[in-house]
Amino acid sequence: MATNETYRNAKGEKVTETQWHNLVAFGKVADIAEKFLDKGTEVALEGKLVNRNYLDKEGVKKYITEIHISELLLLGANAAKAAAEA
Image (cartoon, rainbow, N blue to C red):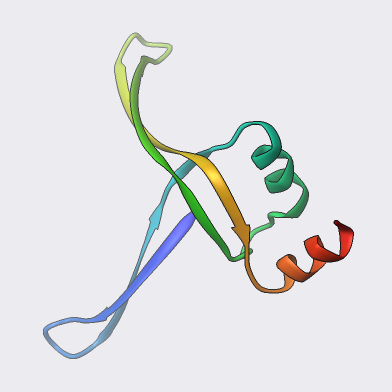
């Protein structure tokens, strides 16, 4: 998932920064995500941040932060589509 922040820098120029987030979904939330989410879909999420680590193929320890989704709310056109199919 990507989130954007837009602000004006010291020179007054408009700047947009994008941050990418790793999401994890299970069960019914995963089913809804698979069925209705595409690139650009607007959603509201609720979940918790989970930090974990693992060893890669070379044995180097890697750290990762994920959002484990507990609630997923579809916004915009996909919300209407999902409601029609319910």
